[in-house]
Image: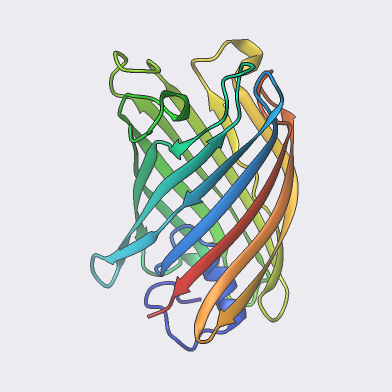
Length: 256
């Protein structure tokens, strides 16, 4: 499969595979909404809408730079009675990964680069006041004719200072993903987001979800749209962490 220049005549099957590639060289704007149930000491419902524009930059015929900005709009439930809920912008994350323009042998694709966290939160309850930086990498298998697309994305962000609101942090993310594609742009997947807060004590570090989702490529006129719906149960989570998550995504795709 060609993952460099994206052609306008791509089929729904091809579009689904490119959407499942974190370093696919196509402009897209995903809106991912995560609803987290039983969050906080009062077991409230948290909602996070991540707006995640992906903009690839062609370095030359052999290399692409894939940039992604994650802008979270957070609805935070109250943590103590009478506090009330909080809504606003969380901390923006920006990543850039260098990736070969063509897959390697056997459909192997990889990307590596950096991710930065910006203290853009509009309320102290929605983020941390310190800038952060760390490495990010992805490796996946995506081969023409193979219905399976699978791989893993990993990063860790360390705070660059510790004297601002929220203090020092070191946050790890591991995102394995498995997709099985049916003809016509329909697919099933599992994309759990495993995280660790290395500054937390003992059993409070990890969040480990298990779950499944379903997705489909549609068209609004000539505009391809990737839609997903999934549910995940956190088999491991901090005491005040959510135990269930409902994830819905709409991704607008802009083939060249």
